[in-house]
Amino acid sequence: MKIGMVMAIRNHPDFAYPLQEVYRDYIDDAVYVESEMGFDNIWVNEHHLSRDQYAPSVFPVLAAIAARTTRARLGTAVCLLPFHNPLRVSEDAATIDIISGGRFDLGVGVGSATREYETFGTPREQAWKRTWEATDLIRRSWEESSFDFDGEFYSYKELSQSTKPVQERVPIWWGGFGPQSVARAARRGFNLIGCASSVYEDTLEEIGRAPSESQVGQVTGIHIAPTRDQAWDEAQHGIHWWMRFHREATGAPAGMTPDGPLMPELPPAEKLRDVEGLTFLPGMPSYVGTPDDVLENLLADCAGRHGRITQLALAFRHAGMRTSEVRNSMKLFSTEVLPHLPR
Image (cartoon, rainbow, N blue to C red; front, side):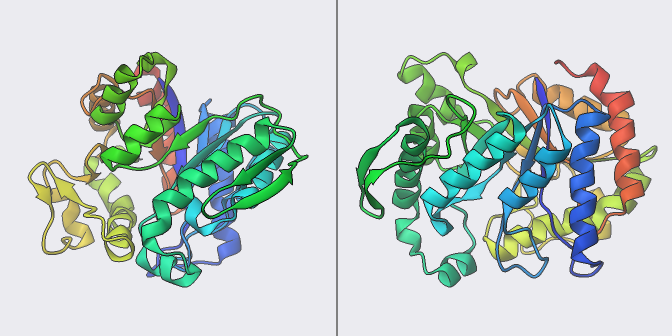
């Protein structure tokens, strides 16, 4: 089991502080989990034009992290391809791979925020076709010296992307949930980031590919403190905003129980701790509590409670949290939880 950290760099609208400090704190987190905790992966994701100042540019952030780390793999989870020129993504990704010495993974997805589509002028109905075509172009630009590309959305003659990655084959991860897209990702040889999927596993079997050849990362919110109440006191506003943001921006039913989404709206932040079986989305849990609370849940996940996974992609810093709270959580994870997880 690989252990990674996923970062949604953002402010909390009600507890905002200068963006220069926000970015510093998140980037320092990335350095810390590699140097002090031995994490295997560091993921950064993107959104655009949101009122929490969600980081829109993942590649500069990854470059900053690459310059201060030496071992952990660095990736986008995910790069929203419908809003990017794929050749530009190809060049940026290759540059990160060079700076990091061959440690880059490209996670891609289509996104689901209506405002982003409207502002970038990308028709939603084209999102899937654009994304699959873009991944074909990116892969070929890395692996071929010169080629013609004649797609529905992108066309190039004698394209030669001269800045090649260090890696012979950069891993590509799919960040999506729809059964058709997950099946297609499996057929294309992509890994899966977000949550486990029976469709993904079934498709791998159908095409004769051993599951052990593919990786599946489970995104999981986490915060640990000596007592459950302390943990919730520190994380409640950030966890609440994580769910609220996705409800407002993407329409996803973030904030769920085994019986379905919390409806018609989320309870106040201070009441989240009273919700039995609270998850962010199905297969993407959020664990807040003592080391024993979190360990019990992560062991169940590693054992396949939600399906086969090969990596825990943990979100430690939630919007508005103080660094002292995040560091204490990380230290408790490192000493009380991590030694008991399968590696």
